[in-house]
Amino acid sequence: MSQPPNCVADFEALAKARLPADEFEILASRAPGNETLRRTPLAFDALALRTRVLPGVANADLSVTVLGQRLSVPFMLAPAGYHTRAHPDGELATARAAASVGTLMALATNSGHPMEDVAKAAGGPKWLQTYIFRDRDHTKELVERAEDLGFVAICVTLDGYWPAKRQLAAKGSRRGGEASDGSRTPLKVLGDPRNTWADPEATWADVERLKSITTLPIVCKGIMTAEDARLAVSCGADAIIVSNHGARLGTTLASIEVLPEVVDAVGGRLEIFLDGGVRRGADVVRALALGANAVLIGRPIFWGLAYNGEHGLADLLDLLREEVEMCMMLCGRATIDSIDGSVVARAPDLEERL
Ligand SMILES: Cc1cc2nc3c(=O)[nH]c(=O)nc-3n(C[C@H](O)[C@H](O)[C@H](O)COP(=O)(O)O)c2cc1C
Image (spheres, rainbow, N blue to C red):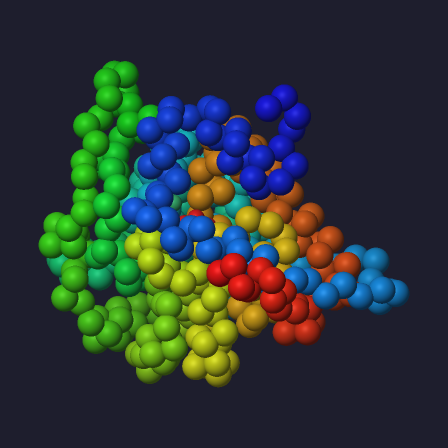
């Protein structure tokens, strides 16, 4: 593609052209069957935007408050392991790109750069993503490091013990699974929850324990049902991420489909974020219309980095910002708070295809 990218999907095509084919596939994280990945864009498209005319809106204010932090845009960067797979600057580039558009990044435990270096790379707010590790002391130690480094929240991934049956590059591997001497790092097949560091025997009591060892807000990631949303509320979580881990299991509903039941169950008692298939400004607005406070993007981080490191990702985030702004103006909404359910209408023909 010789034209510069002008939507997030263009970055995907560029990343595909630039990355080794096996590496691109790892980042694509396609679960066997792919049912969830198939239905996710349809589920977004089935929510048509209701445009308004003559609303007198010349500029839209995209800023939003997330757990007390003011962000310039209503989208954030989801935790995702080893950004170094897409670009050698990895998470350092991501931190800078996030700060450049005024948003936050969630740094994955499985980072390609030490937490300390990412903290120093840019001044924007950061969450640390962790798991309930089998070794609870390890969880505690990570939380303490994050606190010392000025991270603003702990995001605990609750579906992390259920790894996809796909190949993951071994820890510490770089772009293309290549080691610094140019040799290929052997790929490790992870497919059995008995082999994860995240404890499959963890319970909600562990979330309560996590809450008790830190003053930072706790964000529970991986909520897909009203029942779990209520449990997160009762454990004192400060926020949840409605997420199916990027369609990891392949057989769940799209996260945007379960958002309404979660919003209903939570009843405003904590903040609700959503990830999974957010690719356009319209998708951001759709999720906000259904009650999310903000959204996160996962795979597009890798596409932006693969295209042109920090600047590639900053360009992608800028494009997304412009698209959100355009949708808001077309729907006559000047602020994020004014985006409500009346911004979308169900498109019955597309719903039928779900
Ligand atoms: C390559 C890759 C690595 C990921 N690594 C993590 C991780 O380390 N921790 C985590 O909580 N989620 C991880 N995720 C899931 C993302 O946080 C997020 O839930 C998902 O990517 C959102 O969907 P999207 O990619 O369609 O935007 C990963 C996703 C991908 C594609």
